[in-house]
Image 1: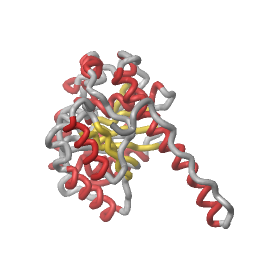
Image 2: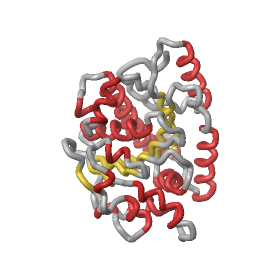
Image 3: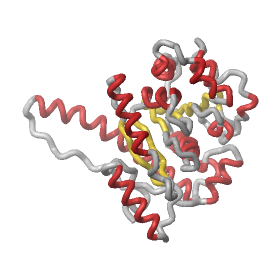
Length: 285
């Protein structure tokens, strides 16, 4: 099971859209997926047709009580996705866990204690750098940072990287970080300049796929389903399917390195690692 958090303290960058649609595309690629809504706004739940106001037992209880993830998981209508929903009460977690021991590892412990089997757990993190985001990072193998093409797109990313370094120093847990460019229109020079800044800032740890502006993504959210279920031929579906394929390729690449390392230890000749398969379109503008 691989755990992926989607994080960015800046709102409006496509964070929840990415979490929902990555889940939808991975599920259509025959992976068992759980979406954990760790945002008090409950937008990931709402985007999968689960009204946060109807949530009587959700991630608040999981984070603050003895409630297990299995007790709150629901199947999103019209999909084969499982969702651990959230609502506004999740905003009280910071206060409720203020003096709690091991508060940074609450989510990790609940995920590790699950009896259900998933290939991927995707965490939609809140637009902040508090205890919820710290829990998401602590539980994750990979963190995806959606970055839109606005003027403030990279503002605060340095602080986010500092928090990830803090998690590593504090817990010994290293999180792989990868940026995802969202709301992209290559028709403007400004967008191309932002893309180049992103590549430099993240030192190449950037998805090759670009998420283009696509109104069908917003329509899918309003209908409470991922884009892969709403319009699988749309540009939005193609883009997020390509991101899902990159995520799967990363998994294959990581597994391939294990026998390579063993061969090196035995002084055996090792071939060069395979490159990740190309995705559906342009890697550079």
